[in-house]
Image 1: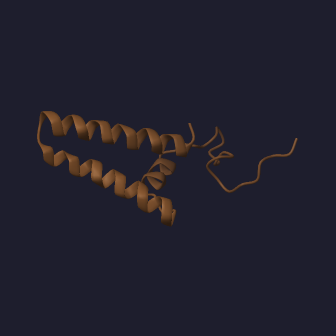
Image 2: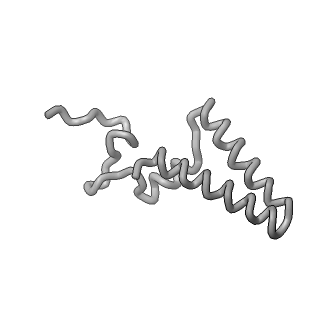
Length: 80
């Protein structure tokens, strides 16, 4: 799984969990949804995404050798 897909999955999961918690527990949980949305918006303009840093440290988006794959890193693709 690439880091981009993992970030989308994480953001979607957090939004759905936040909405469920807001419905069943307290409407204050909607602040989590706002945080996720603001983080996605700022990352679109700045390129800085804390979730991406954390996921890369966990090894998401890396191949078997531990190097970034063609979608996750700035290494050129192998010519074949």
